[in-house]
Amino acid sequence: MSAKLAIVVPCYNEEEVFPTTVARLLALLDGLQARGAVTPDSFLLFVDDGSRDRTWSLIEEYTARDRRVHGLKLSRNCGHQNALLAGLALAEADALVSIDADLQDDPEVIGAMVAKYHEGCEVVYGVRNSRASDSAFKRLTARGYYRTMQLFGVEIVYDHADFRLLSKRVVAHLQEYAEVNMFLRAVIPLLGFRSGIVYYERAPRFAGISKYPLRKMLAFAITGITSFSVAPLRFITLLGFLTFMFSFVMVFWVLYGKLAHGNVIPGWASSVIPIYFLGGAQLLSIGVLGEYVAKIYLESKRRPRYIVEKQV
Image (cartoon, rainbow, N blue to C red; front, side):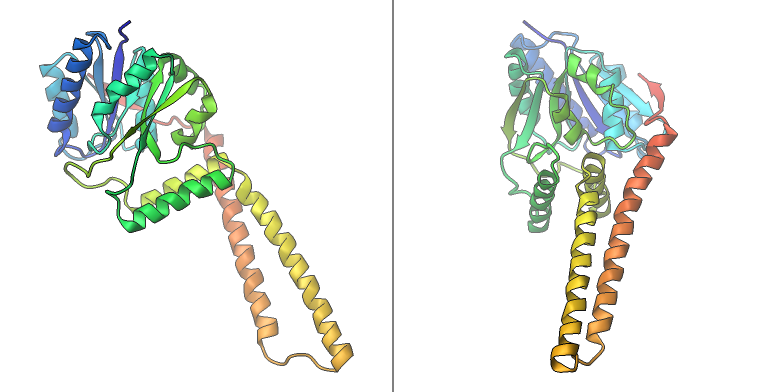
């Protein structure tokens, strides 16, 4: 049985790649419709996340050309995750696929995702089968990040970003998660439902520049960890306990040196090093606590995650 498919594409300053992206995704819809996998009213939804170039003008231009192209303009740059949520919330379809506009995620595997949906999967993850296109630094940091998330008890699919298929029912339940600090890569596995995986080769960026420099990648990583795990807080407790025990041992060591040998090791190291150690531990602890307090502060204000300025 055919399903109505919506392909949600968040866009931020994507004018260079946009025409090619539209052409490839429309050709994909044609192929899926010809095979009877999707209905003729399947469509693309481009979400303009406060772009400063001609992205929105291009979206309006293509919506006038083809009824299967739709657009959503946010009032400002709300961030990739919020742009995705806006598109998923407003796209009415049986199955919804999210994919970035830069063509690094292979659109051709959307057909395999739809096939798994017809087999009964309500969540289908697009997972990279290698990181050969990444730099050595990015491979190292990515692997370290996923392992850290798993170490902290966060359920996350290894090497999966935001390329996935969700059923209409899953999207409806996703709307019940109202936190401001949304991290979809960890939220989606929490929803449950029958899931599947399709593997693909990630391509180099077709055009334009990456919208995730190192600064944003680090902020995104911190958000993911602190939004889904209390392990850092427990690490502080463990660190405090170990520091206390270390100091306790030092007291006995000094007393033993004084009573057994009549002297202690002279020099500043025995006094200055513990000061630096304790000072660093305190600053680290305050920083981690501050990150969680900031999360509470942002959630307590209950501000909207995005505002839709225009829809075509």
